[in-house]
Image (cartoon, rainbow, N blue to C red; front, side, top):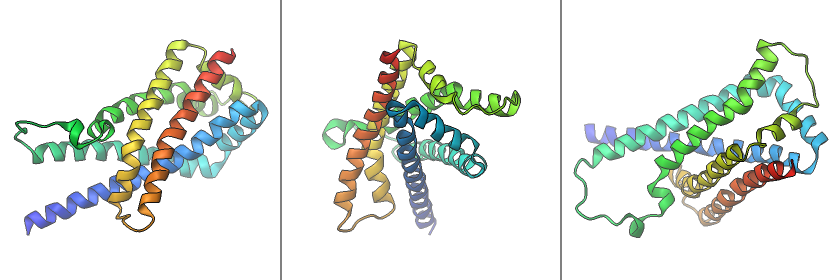
Length: 221
């Protein structure tokens, strides 16, 4: 009975982890779309960013939900990793990981930690200055400032390189995470193979788009 309850708790954790991952994937699609506008039009990017930055629903509802989703996803990732390690206290005598699983699936915790570090840099670059601008300094809204602030962050080749490396590791994380999330929520039907292919394309296209954005603004200066 206790073993059954423990198994059910483990399944619920994996489902919760998967749902939070799917939620964050949805956010990534929105985020890369908004950022890619900066490559196409400075005015359109400023307009879209200003709308997002001062829309009450986004700022006071969606933003806290997103923050909770990010924290929850990473905490659950660490919990499940520790749980899996504890379930195998004795290391295998021989284990050829490359023959049994992809690099991305074997190193989700590594790519996750790098992404977590990247989020810290991203908050430092964009979220904290935004909070200071609007709520601490109380500066009057300026709908033309966003493009210049974005371009300035990609002036340094070191910072641009860090962003690009983080986006590449994000791709590896998504490569396994997207398909794993679908399996965890029970997506085993005639559409599962198609959705898995969509996930692989997403894992390539979205990080590649972020890299293009970073390199575009770096080399344009």
